[in-house]
Amino acid sequence: MKKTITLMGAIVAVGMFATAASAATLDDVKARGNLSCGVSTGLPGFSAPDDKNNWAGLDVDTCRAVAAAVLGDANKVKFVPLTAKERWTALQSGEIDMLSRNSTWTHSRDLTLGANFTGVNYYDGQGFMVSSKLGVKSAKELDGATFCIQAGTTTELNLSDFAREHGFKYTVVTVDTSDQSVQAFEAGRCDSLTSDQSQLYGLRSKMSNPASAVVLPDVISKEPLGPVVRKGDEQWFAIVKWVLYAQVNAEEMGITSKNAKEMRGSDNPAIKRVLGSDGTFGASMGLTEDWAYNAITQVGNYGEMFERNVGMNTPLQIARGLNDLWSRGGLQYAPPIR
Image (cartoon, rainbow, N blue to C red; front, side):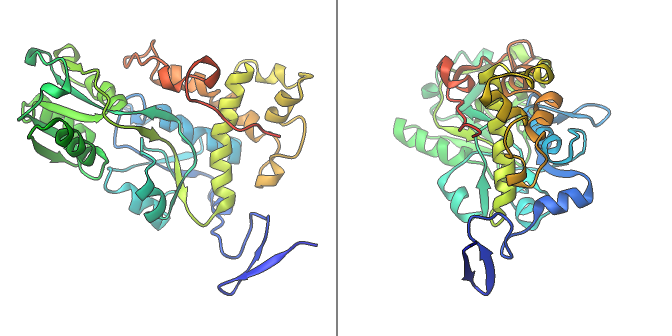
């Protein structure tokens, strides 16, 4: 017999996703026919539009993978560009179904914003970019410097902690968008632009002369970045979380966008579960059994997403590092589908 409890007048089925107390985001997305996904206003490698307003990047691909799993089509995404200050209100208000905008998972955000982080699609840390002419080799040499930062980010508190630890004074120039921050840096309004290192590499690639700036080796914080959903909808939370996990598992098993169809006939039970030819793991989330297969064939495994958008053969030239699989010395690790 299914056990139920009463919570503030709502009947909740214990162990079931669909409850009277939760918002049915999955139903909304299916009825609408597209996924509304909050992204940045333009950060190369993560979420940026081209001149035809076609979006690309690691965070964009995270949205596309969810759309493929839920709707069977990775192209059924409405991208909503948001500043750092706008993103949480857009998520809380229901303007977007999920946020995939280089957002750091922190204690306060996890507990006070009505948001659930669904995993980490990029392990990062705050760094510093300076003019090559400055001759600075370490952030510890920036006593008395002026820093460009974005409002509504974790950057300012991290900078304050770092400055206090190393006993130097500083001033800040606060802007709203990443484009404004790199424009202020290029215009000489600040000595250093400080943000997540991944963002610094992306912003440097947008400069008129990228070689005129250098990203210092210092990393002063932990910035686990990942997609976010509203609290209160456990089904949707599980879907977004497990799409990313499926992509990480796929890379570990050698499943790619090119060979997934062939590997669907594998005798390996773990591979069969990921690709939907064994078990009812899709049904348990309200999806078809080819949910992960669609995400992988249309978008790729995690490694394919990384290399296509920010890897060594892209303008950002970022090595896998912490974002490599755990079996190769990185931090990317996913629970099994079983």
